Length: 208
Image 1 (cartoon, rainbow, N blue to C red):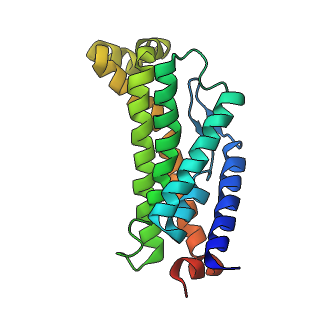
Image 2 (image 1 turned 180 degrees about the vertical axis):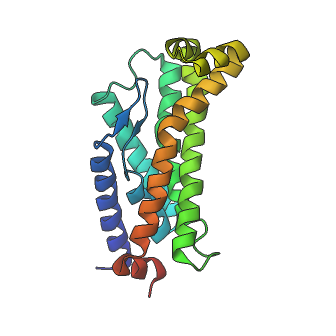
């Protein structure tokens, strides 16, 4: 098997594995977003093993697949107008999953494979969080007051007393998306660091 065929075959398997892992949900939020342990890891590995460019392409393919699943399985676009559907497609799927391919950005500059993939995975997954944060602010910011009104704790009341309008929408999107992305980021970094130390994967990553 030549290198290009091997790369395509492995990437296809990684996309399939990531899709399968995305169905294993620990926690799901009411308006999108869920903790799906290690579902980002296969795409992050592609970005590290084969190059940032290839990783970005693999991430976009995965993002398109997730958007289709969101349409037909979880009704992710129900109630949205056409403009917001386009924004969600771009920010919550194509961009959010595409940036996972940036996991290999430190591969050439940092010789320690565990550290370089760990740092790359952090940057890539953080950028995914940023993409969801922007989407949450633009598309779902109108839910902010309802969200904090439902949360009748002291914390929720303090937020409502302190922020309003766009500020409230920003805080809402930050808290909402951080609630599932922070655990996902931590788990993904751990998963990548563990897997890169498995001899066959490390050999593929270092071409040795």
